[in-house]
Image (cartoon, rainbow, N blue to C red; front, side):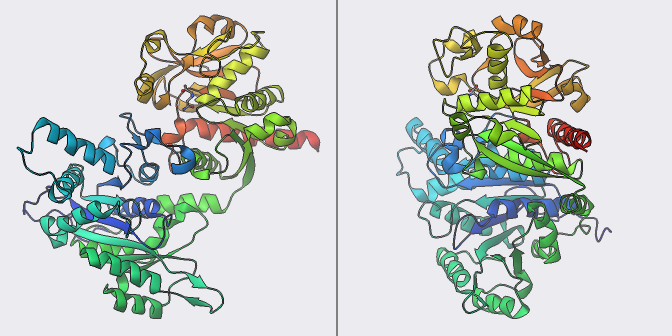
Length: 556
Ligand code: GLN
């Protein structure tokens, strides 16, 4: 239903960022409340109302980008088409909305200072004293305004928790932006925690009150509060929060814990969040079309089958380091209305023992991307087990390289075959740097980052999945299949089913005479979405389901 035709243009009024309206999202009380998911879900709801959205994450840390950060500490690095290495929240943004993100959609304190200091050295400030206010804050504002393009709404998420020293310049910048942009063109949403105290059987609003006080001290009065809680907030609790925090009663939103993260947009809508946002921003839109989200949740909650997928990796203790991978597997399941249970296997533990006890009950084996030597041999044992026991296998980036190494050692008889990443002096470097990379000494310079095209061989598992001859996928790695071994590998049954357009780089390999064995040099998980599962994940889960059913039939 169209309520009014206008999608929020500023009635001819010229503003700083064209017609774009801005939503600023901050977080309080504790970290890890799910600010990224909240931002992404708001994006999804506004898109469902017919608006064009874009999202941006501001990270208060000093690293210039998360590319060099340990995934144990920071979670996965999300790579964009343009090669930017970004925060994992951008993964949520791309999965929940159709916004096309670039390096401008994520920046850090480090990047801001880097650019201000570069300008200072160049003499741009004409001898003036360079200060946090206004130079750093102006640089932040410029970066925020630069992403608006032709979006109706830009959602800006500020990392960290209110009260952190590091986030102060960002908060000051967004405080200033409200008057720069005009009241109706910007909105502050604050995410807090309302804990339930078991002993008194009560929900406590004090942490929220304090967090809002902290924001007000800086000069920001939130317009909407999203309260994370494991109980619904009663009208009385909402009234209390509204009174103490000075927000409308219908601007206090319950964000109850949910079973699946894809329920969040639907819950927010039930709470009236998107209605309140468009009202406060004075925008007129149609009511949201949420069928797509309802179908996804329906499929997740009513599975008709189930498979267990083993993920054999190193960062098994921190699920966030495989965030996109986990989601892509769930998406693969959605395509078949199938529940995908993820079984994390520590490759070092497996290496000390054997593959069988870890993998005998699973329906599929996945070896994900990774860097460094630790646990490598355990992962190779897992590949061999999947190949010999005919369990569907999916190798991603490092996982594909290890599949090639295992095949070279065991099927081609190349003893000690390895990647020169793990053994520089190996007799058989089946995985190696390309000759032109070997001349570069700066590690960053040798990385293949971002989207690259590949051509697929018809009549392959890859083509069956994509149904397209040319694809584009995102990369983040240094090493490649060594062309010197390609002939031997092919002769023994390895198919290079995806190649770079010049034929020089192996992008996909697969094996004949196996139910489903495929490795890819890129990261397909970065482009999977719940409503558009990635073809390789869809087919991998399909193979796992099919083989499981076959096995069951055989046993009965
Ligand atoms: N370490 C391997 C390389 O640099 C694989 C990287 C990855 O899996 N992302 O090529």
